[in-house]
Length: 493
Ligand SMILES: [Zn+2]
Image 1 (cartoon, protein in one colour):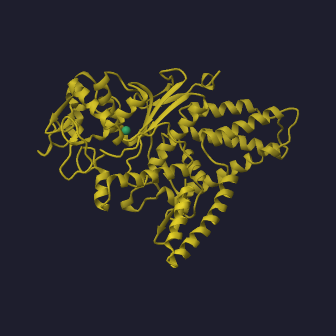
Image 2: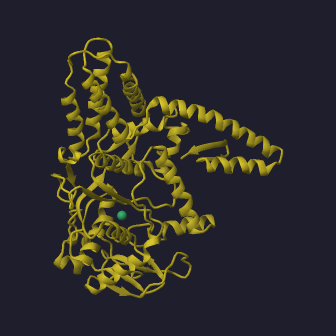
Image 3: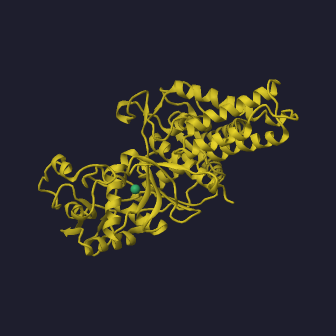
């Protein structure tokens, strides 16, 4: 009997604001879609937090022996600077500013994104599709929406007709916004726009002559609207109706609202059964923003190279810190919080690393079966990682009590304790054991430092063939060197 038959999950569904029993459409199978990053800059720590929440959910569903298809896209076209279908494409703008090809921007920040997620020990999704790889599918959906009467073409661009849609369907079903209020609150069209109404959104935009990212379509050479790609890719890989759709809270409106409208306008069906939204990450009690300096890049947590932290932290410590908050709570990123998590993380690892030396006896004074079910109960209750972590600390307490003789355990219970604590700590929370992480990273750092110094010498001697060879071969081994004004640093994947 698969594990999911004995554990029943409740999921907080943003669609109705309630915790609901999770029942997949096809028993034993789960389809999950999460909106991925727009790859025009280094991944934001807030996004890392969102993706980590879904990484843990993915891990737990897999642990329960569901067959999970997890789709997380890469937005490499169509995401404009603001949500009102105005401004430049974010990737095209970056490419223009740096005088490089848009696909170079995409490549650079996709690699950065994967490096960071690997460092944080994320599992890769089952499919990671790109918007530019699904232009044909997006054009097909637009044709359907036009045929069904919910979109109109003006001057080579196509817009979704929100008022028309709202006559028979409900625009605002997810975000609980009312179309009347939207009309009221949206500023009037400035005469530049082709839209009939300001709340309409673009499905296809005709490209200006200087716009490099463009594809042929029945309406114009142009590019798809941002919201459309997720409808195209989720439908293609998960079907017209699937189980879970996730993303950051900031995507609920308009992005996810528009996804629902597009899918309903195409298939006349609600596309998603459970909508899940991860809350924000703030820093030192305030919104994180580059412009105010209240900002940290994920990499800087591992190097310690940022004024807001006092030291470098292991990726597992940062991961542990983030998972000590429930995904629906706001997480305040602070140095003190990280220091406390570091202590907690090592306390847990120290206990786990003691477990093989414990002595067993004829009876148990601790109730391991009950403790184990509490670990499941925590995750079954809308993936409550902070409660799970509190339970893992109870497990650590048992280990310490058994070690100092104030508690006893049978061999059978010890085996159960060992496997349960390892499963939840390493497989489900995705932490790495401190022993391996610390020892591994220390030796690796020293070895890479030696190579960095050899490469520096080679460059001083103008032996660029050798210096390039060192960099390229390290890169092949998964170690990327970065030359900065303060010397060379490295990241691993
Ligand atoms: Zn999306």
